[in-house]
Length: 302
Length: 302
Image 1: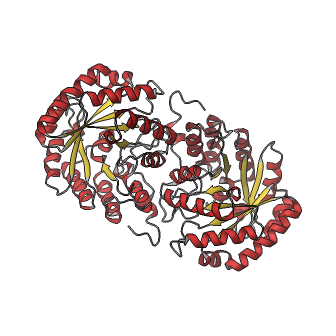
Image 2: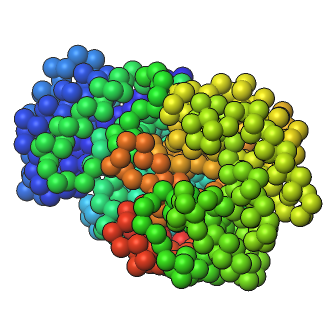
Image 3: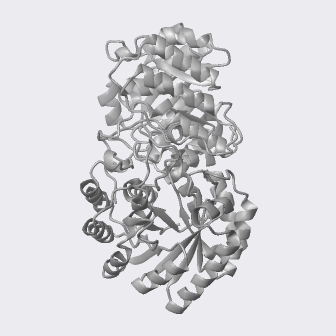
């Protein structure tokens, strides 16, 4: 637990949750500034049809741009095999597909049963291997679903095994709905690692919907998680809407990790300044996080 | 770790940080509603001179009122022996004194050196024993000070031992400045428990200044902490001011504990409704917490 990868997902998960379209130039400035601050992985967008999510229409351009930034791991979300082909063509280093542990949610969201999803994962795994692209499966709604409620842990374990069998190179557990709690995070990380091998589950994707995001992150760290997704300014959450679901805040997460003596490779004062790009390009949009307002503690060594 | 005492400190720590004076009737309604929701301990105010802190002028009346609520442990803060006499006279079940681990902070805040504070603690301990009142010493700025910066852990351990020797019946570790991180919480709780006996350190008082409050609480639970201070709505914090320092939010804390299967005795839906009293009696005041806006997860059993 001496080095953790903080994976910035704001340009994908943050932006996809807000209506206003961020100009391409601002997205590029954001990505470049985070990379310059030492962020080593950024999910730059999603290869969904532009008609469904206009915010993500420029993902291929962002991949091409991000690939020019030295040392940056450029990843994107893909909803299906078609999106995966586009991602590979665009030149991503890695791609991930959300696989909803709630079959009801999967059917209502992407109109696919669990069996259909496993087939899709197998097809994408083939594409990924052929193109030498990393392919992760994100076990979404793993901690609970807004339609089904609680999700049986046995089901998550079983579906994790099926995803690996279908060719997933890595899994992540995703608290899409912000239902998770630290005890559950520990239990589920432990069970999935035991089922598929510790090296196959490295990542947690957490939301701060009920304020437990960093406590859940800590629980994950204690179970050997080494990658944490986060969004600058918690972009995409809204405290005034039921089901508010912003990602954990990159700034607060990096502060926590560095204060604990965990290496992230990120220059925290520089990271805090990147927020200005969001403030300027998305005026009036709600941003979250406490460290940006409070500042770093006196004598804090970043 | 199956039962935790959530100690509500909003009527003291929350209110003392805001300018507007909450009417006595509203304070009573707040305290009564939390007690009715199952909160078993409330710090109802502070016995500081009313000239210094007009918000706390009615603390004796609140103690008398709170004492009529069945099963409620009624506690108050005392800055010195004079305040302790007033607290005993008012009929508190317990009282606590903040003992700043930063001598600079102690001198600037209460104009007392560490040696003076230990003398004061000894005098109050005598008063408390004679009156059969519980007396706790809160080791404040234990995780860092806004004037001195980092505080040596050796100094905290040494001062903890001195406070116990002077007659403290219990200690709490207080992250007054929101500087703490989970690794530090674990280390310091472990060290202080080892020095003074595990039963002497039961309580953490945490602020959410940099968003780490619940992660720090989790770290404390894992080290055997059994009492957590919190403030309804995180009252008293301000995200737009440098050094914003609201307590951890009672609603989010209780959600976390109950989601983890830890008993608190609190009815969470009822607790969430108490917030309305703050909204109505302090219009426009910033309230914090995520669970009140997001609501409880579907299928959540409180």
